[in-house]
Length: 395
Image 1: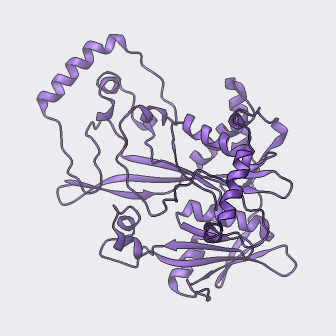
Image 2: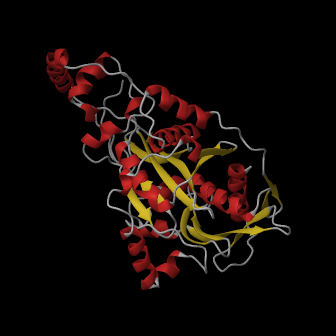
Image 3: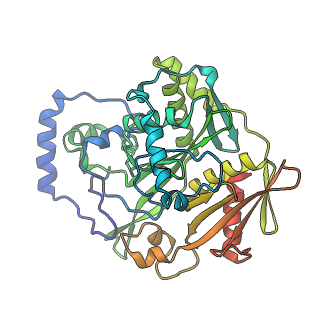
């Protein structure tokens, strides 16, 4: 079992001396009689809240800090830049927030019939018969209680994102861990960090679709002697997404007993997937769904792939995104750009694109295309990669 402390980007890995190990072992063993061994769970982020802030890589997809939330009503062009330019929009958002009772987070649970799970491929999401304003404080409380403090909230995009946090359940619970580790918990690290993004979409009937997407990072050894570490991206985990959706269903419906929680999780796990609904056709992804559903699923796909959504215009069907081509630079590589430490020059290397979602004739299907920053069709190799990534998520 490795007990070395994980360090941040490009720091030297140091091993504890033999004397220190003996000292720690002696002290831990003397206290072992006073400790209780606990069973490991698949998810355990709560332990991290008691520790010092984790050394995690800042990332280009960081949202602007904004603790207000107002879902655009669909009239006119709803963009972040447009709302920022209109003082009345902020006032309206504040007014909407102030109309919510102080105990909004404690509004009673909804019935099980008021929560529906939908699935397309390995994407799952909830449809809840409550408004975004009612759900927003509940979601913030849900993530904080799960040991994943909310880092950012975006009024314009309807997105809430957690901090990078370590899943402590992945640390083996052997004898050494349960003695030394119980006293010197920070001496153990998995070298992995997770964060979760929640996206809310308002439906015409006042209900809300809730999407949860996961992002992961892991620390790997580099250098000829493996003397330093670097943070890299690891694939998103649909299993974790489903697990937190199940926990959210349990929270929203007021499930308290283990049997009720297991039932809520089973509904998410066993949700029937819809037939494949997307295919890559030339310079577009053809989606076998109308604009409303295609728009929301493209938003989730962008979250899961890791794009930076800077703005969105739902009326025109445009997501304004940043993307770093992993093959664009052989010098530093994709991951060092994605997890750069405040290097503005690297951040500027991320190119801006527009992802356009447009309903086809008849309205029963949609096409997803990529445009350059000026709004012109982009048939470059990078645009093709973007479409391929989206197609993998949408099909």
